[in-house]
Length: 202
Image 1 (cartoon, rainbow, N blue to C red):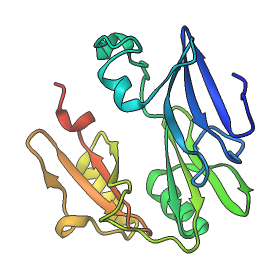
Image 2 (spheres, rainbow, N blue to C red):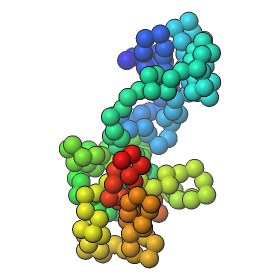
Image 3 (cartoon, rainbow, N blue to C red):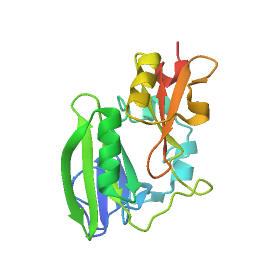
Image 4 (tube, rainbow, N blue to C red):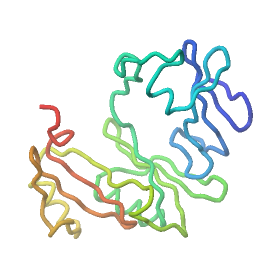
């Protein structure tokens, strides 16, 4: 995988290239808050560019694709990357709540970042945005969901940390499972479900 210019990076697959914009990406996989512009489209082997909206409905030659046979088969979500106002406060909150530890930290263009995680569980990444504000009515992460083995024990431990649950300080009963919700220091909700995917797939 080699960048074709200082501002772009191309991922090569047979007959297709996935194009991403790149500006001062930090030295690890999660996307930087500022600059990493995201997937912009597909460029076929003959150089024709196709937007994502077109690509999702039809293949490079206009034929509808089977979403399973053409999809990238990721095993699970590896990490979530959050923008936070205060790195120290967020690190303290998430490390105590989730039992994860600081793995790596640094600074990129004046923006501090770090990664918390636990081997074979998950990772949570943070970028510090000192003047940022959480805007529920705008584009944002609505909540981050985790699955737990014992809901009652989970609630007991959350209360033991001095944290109250959202929704009257008790779990929410959904049609197939229960979920407990807490809110982090920046207003981002965290869900703990007693069934993976909320029991959508028995």
